[in-house]
Image (cartoon, rainbow, N blue to C red; front, side, top):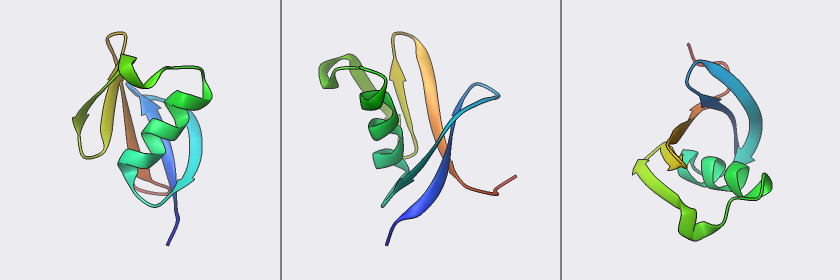
Length: 63
């Protein structure tokens, strides 16, 4: 089942993604902006880092 996720960089909302998991949502977003897989580091189940910035996925509507 796919869920809608908000992708955040710090406090800033950068994208909305539909994915099966939060991790998949973050990776899909980073891939869509041209990040290569070998440049992405997973830092948590719902977050990944690219060039020092951390991107986190939260279910749409979460506080």
